[in-house]
Each structure stands twice: as structure tokens, then as C-alpha cells.
Image (cartoon, rainbow, N blue to C red; front, side, top):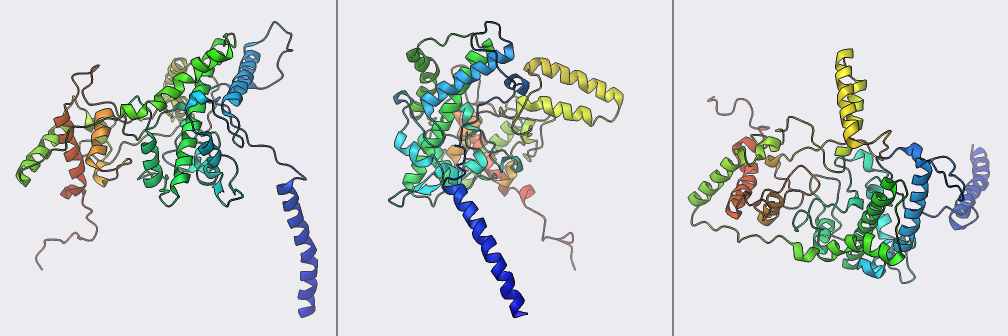
Length: 437
């Protein structure tokens, strides 16, 4: 028996050595791995437009698909010049980005000669948010809500007015605290310099994606016939408009009037009661989505955020396949055709399928960007960027919006909901509670 075990180990040792050698060669160079690349944003486009051979360079007659492929080549070249690659990033002075911080977060996870952690984004973030910041990393499909796609420059949770970019402190806060009710964890234990580097890299990915969208608009939607002019004009036309809102974010913070003070509990209760009336008001329309009892069940139709609403095409197509009758299917096909014409998209391709948005159940007391009064005030006043939750506060463009005092009434009402008796679970009380023995 011992002899057979020794023989088995003798056979396994060379096999193990060969396996380790193969791994070592793969990592260290004999079979050198392809460099990591940013993925171009072709979501919602017909993938057939980007396959097959291009026309000869000297050909004057090119198909639309060939023009689109040439446009993608131009876009890729410009983005490489402005932003580099995931392993070797670059930033233009006009971007306002800190290259040292971006480099600290970029590339594969590793330690530098001074034993400092590098490759922070790929170590902590890419498995959800993707190498390109498209929100489609390997684990994204299993999460609800999906991880943020940075490339539109839209962020839901921030202290600034609705149309503005988040501040540096907003992004730091998300990394420190995570986002309650989602898969976004807290990274509070990371050193401050690593947090700073990750924040800068998120900005870098967002700005790269926004520049790409502007170039897409110019080149792909003009069949590749647009004149991009001189390199200097390229920067002023396609980078500066992206960079300036990020640089000006600090000046866009929404400051609220002082939190109300109450002389006694009765006055506070009356203040909250006014918020309850506003919540049910048809003009304010809180109950339309959150429901009359604030359980998040008020909407009679499926809701989608900006990252998913353009994918409703897919959702309706799925309904056609599941239609119970021919008549039903015919009706749904007409709906599909109408939406198809609205979106002007054929054979569209998405990294992730459509995901429905669920309004917040306010009785759970889970607020994704914090439960401080000022946090809830900002959500009500400015809404949530990229979602159906609209701006409710009065603005120069919408003077009929809610006044600060009315917003505070809603804030206090919303924050009181988890403590109402109807919000308390019945588990443990028993169906015989209150019955005399």
C-alpha cells in the first residue's frame, strides 16, 4: 500500500511541475498575453455594421457600414491620443485630471518597488464596473441594480443640482460608505491616497466615455462624413465641453435653508402631517411611484432609468415571444413597431438586458445616498439624475415647484415612515396578541 502511494506521488510530481511551468511561462512571457483595451461604445447599434472587410482606402464609393467602421477607427485613434490605454493612461492638460492619481489606479493589480498598491481600479472595481467603465463587468449581470455605467457622465447620488456632475467629495463619500440597498460596498478601510486615486480614475473613465459619445454623435450619426477639423478644434469641441462641468462641480452644490427647529413635539408632529398631505397631493405625485402607503408599489407601468429605458425594445420583443394568443401577439408587434420607429434602432446590441427600475420602499429606511435630512432634501429638490424621479423644488425655469418649507415637510414625513406602526413587522407578535388568556 505504501509503495503504491509513493509511486503515485512520483508520477504526480513531474505533472505538477509541468503545470507550474506552463503557468509561469504564460505569466512571464513565453505566451505573452494581449494588452487590455478599452471597449468602444457601440451599444444600441447594429453589430452587422461593424463586421466584414472595409472598402479599399482609395475607394470613393463606400457603404454606410464601411463609413461607420472608418468612423470607429477615427474615434479610437482620437481617444487613444487623449486618454491612452487601461495599462498606460494619459490625460490632456485640458481635462484637469491628475495623471499621477490616474496611473496609481490604472493597470493590473500589483505593488510598485516601494510596496505601494497599484492597479486599484482593476483590483476593487472592474469586476462590476468593467475595464471601460461601462457597468458591464463579469459580475454585473447578476446584480440589481446594475453597476453604474460611467460613460454618460450621469451619476444618481450627489450633492449638486440635477444637471451638474458630482463633486470629488460626493464620489469619496460613495467609496467610504457604499450605496445602501445595492452591491456597492464600503471601501472605508482603504488608505486616503488610494481613495483619491480611485475617485480620479472614475472621473477619467467618465470623461473618456463622454468624449466618445460626442465623437459618436458627430461621426457615426453623420455616416462618417463630418469634418473634425484641426486637432486644436478637436479638443475645444469634444473635450472642453466634457471637462468644464467636472471642474465646476463644486460651484453647483445645492445649499438648503436651515433645518427647521420645533418648540415641542406637537409642533413637529403637525409639520410631519403637512408632509403626509403633500405626499398624497396629485400635483406633487410622490404616491404615483412610491404608492399611497410609500411601499414603492404605486407605478402602473414599468419604469426604467436612462441606462435601461432605451432597451425597452428588447423587453417588448420578449413579450411577443411569450404572448398567449395570436391576437395578443399582433397587438404587441404593433407596439414593438411603434417603439422601434421611435428609437430608430435596428438589430440593436446591448451588453446587458433591460432591467426594470423599482421605486424606493420608503418604509424600509434605506436611502442610497444617506439618511441625513440634507441628503433627503436634495433628493426631493433635485430628483435623482438619470431616473424618472424629477426635480420637485422651485427653480427659475419652474417657479411653481415646491418651496423649501414644503420640501422640509416631505423630508420629515419620509424620514418618519419607518417608525410608523404600519412599517413594523408583525413577526413575533403572534395572531393571538391582545387576546385575554
